[in-house]
Amino acid sequence: MAQGFPLPRNCPFAPPPEYERLREEAPLVGAELPGGRVWLVTRHAEAQQVLSDPRISTDPATPGHPMSALSAKPPSAEEREAGARFRAGQFIDMDPPEHDVHRRMLIPEFSVRRVREMRPDIQHVTDRLIDDMLEQGSSADLVEAFGLAVPSMVICRLLGVPYSEHDFFQSRTRRMVGAAGRSQRDAMAAAMEIWDYLDGLVTEAGRNPGDDLIGRLVTTRQATGELSHDALVGMTFLLLLAGHETTANMISLGVLTLLRHPARLAELRAAPDGWAPAVEELLRYHSIVDWVAFDRVATEDMEIGGQNVRRGEGIFVLGASANRDPRAFERPDELDLRRGARNHVAFGYGVHQCLGQNLARAELEIAYRTLFERIPGLRVVGDDDELPFKYDGVIFGLHALPVAW
Amino acid sequence: MRIIADRLRCVGAGQCSLVLPEIFDSDDEGLVVVIGEVTEADADGLRHAVRICPVGALSLRPDSSPAPGTPQAAGR
Image (tube, rainbow over all chains, first blue to last red):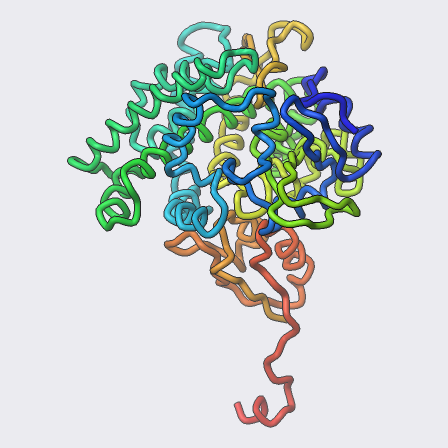
């Protein structure tokens, strides 16, 4: 039984400390939330099971969905209305077959092959940002100058969103996913502003489609009636948001972690083949998206990990706990950059496993490798206990990372 | 040994082609295609690919083609 949820992290390099006890207690433990009781999935096998069971729904409209239990107050009419508006195209919140129809339109844009073709462009973006850092002096906030900038430039170019608008998106994204204490109303207003902007962009692409994701979807999917205008706006919204915040946090957090393991970093510099497994391990180790994308609800009575789960009971899969489960990973709390384990759930599992995972892998690999190659004297200014970690956010990371060289 | 890739299940995660790029690739739809010959030497890698596929789209089957020496094979 967990007391309260979400449980806080107190160390930047570990999941919430309570997770270990919960994981040893049972694969599923109950948690009392302000709005009701939910199940927390603590172990790797059951995490994969829950995330891939077709009898388990992710749709927030399914009765018993756990997100509504986070707050004691039922959503206001205003929130319900905004929720309904934002639902279009949000395939992350859809079950099959509706989910699959949307995802399949996007799969070619993010395939391993397509990402391979995008690598020179990602490299170019990365190099330019490092040029700027070097030109501007001998110190920077790595989050602002690099961590956020790389993924946001890449996703803007991919979608066909002018990068000149990135300040607009970044400030609003922060309001949406930033501090948990921030008002729901402000987060909603920020989301609305992004939505309205993309709405205009999709309309413009209808008149003058570019050679980018929005342009291609307008000509191949909207024109044929397969995709509505709102659904296209919603999909773009989701990709922009998902492509921004998560990779940005992983870049900054990964750079910090690598600088704290200088011997390992030296090995990687000497043998760049090691970057791909190192990225995989950093994803597992940090598990920055813990439970927030893994909100599910049972649509039938079933048994999971020896526990009876009833129809309408909400479930949060604790990705950060599953990724430290000793049943799935040897010495799970150790950062082993040569481990190369691909069975982690940092990108989820099942039909919702991250669409952009291979783009993220390429961005992380190129960003880490190039940064340490080109700025060999990079160092963090300050100790870990002085750095502003996102203990208050729903996605873990750093608000800022002062570096010098 | 044969590898079966179910393209109706595939969600284009690409895990298989990261593990065994010489056997798995994605096509224009971004979905899995088997491009290489599968041999016994790939057995461990294939089992790994089957396990990490997030949607269970891959399955390993014993080779159902006729063994050498059977009439069909002998006729080739």
